[in-house]
Length: 257
Image (cartoon, rainbow, N blue to C red; front, side, top):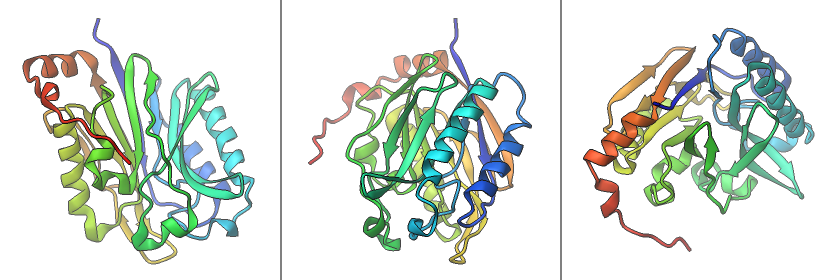
């Protein structure tokens, strides 16, 4: 039996520093989904925009958003994933939550904070990779700038899907397109990138280019519009590709310091 995973990802503009408005926006878009979706993916910092001043927002908004994600996951019977500024133990992290319909959740803190924007001065860097096992698929969720660092995403854990959420700006969008495809090919895995559109408070412009690539680098979905995208990934297709082309057996081993 071929295992399938139906994934919806939402590409939209965001309200700056307005978590309640953004949650309402995403709730409205999630209501348009048809039945059968297994996973809903939202962009990086989907409640605020890519902010370096999270302390200007109520610190409890992180927990409120986590509760909202639990509600949406339960209501839609689909997992919900996306990152937000999260305050805990006296510090902020750019934290991705992967919330399942039963309320269970796991989290990943962005390892590569974006020094060009001073993210490293505001958010603590994550130290551990996350592999989520969900409906027969192994998923590795990462965040935006992580895309530039292939060693961190190297498929030594035999994941099936590499998932990036992002606020990746228009001037460097060609790098986004190229690196998403490269990560799929080199890791022999599906690779999905979910970006936003519109302009933020700092006049950064975003043009989407959310996409999905298969293990051979074939583009399955792509868009520059504000819309809800969907794709179905197949475990059998991935297994057949890896069996025929056994490139992962020759991968190098790395030890991260």
